[in-house]
Length: 195
Image (cartoon, rainbow, N blue to C red):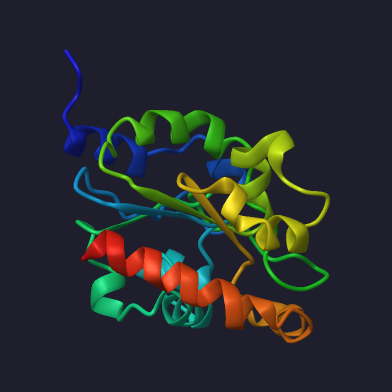
């Protein structure tokens, strides 16, 4: 018999597959509901998300919510927004700065199964290069900039975005089309889907 959605989520959140590779231990951080209409696939939770069990619960999340023109309450309404990173657990710090990439084992282990429990998704936002590489595969462009700029090609299924980290302030500054052209279109799509 097919397991219920709640049984599935409980199993996912109890995953210990990569625990020995994680500096803070395994703690999958997701927001899922079969009613969700928009799926956001990011990289991996940061330390604050790990500690609070709330995805994008940091400055990057504030910026992403601003890009989408959503309040915190709207963003964390699981009947509207599902949040599923490429790596479900905090991967640790990169000695060169920022966090390490999401662990590669997570997406192949969990994503396909999870998507079966999200039948109402009308748009998937691919936030950052890891989500774009995994989902767009050979359809993505040579660079993240080219991929994001080609966003109309991936509709109606996917909408690629850069990561909303402060580290991408420079990217936003040299790509003003992102805020002037892309964001209004993204906000219109989000508004039309959520009603």
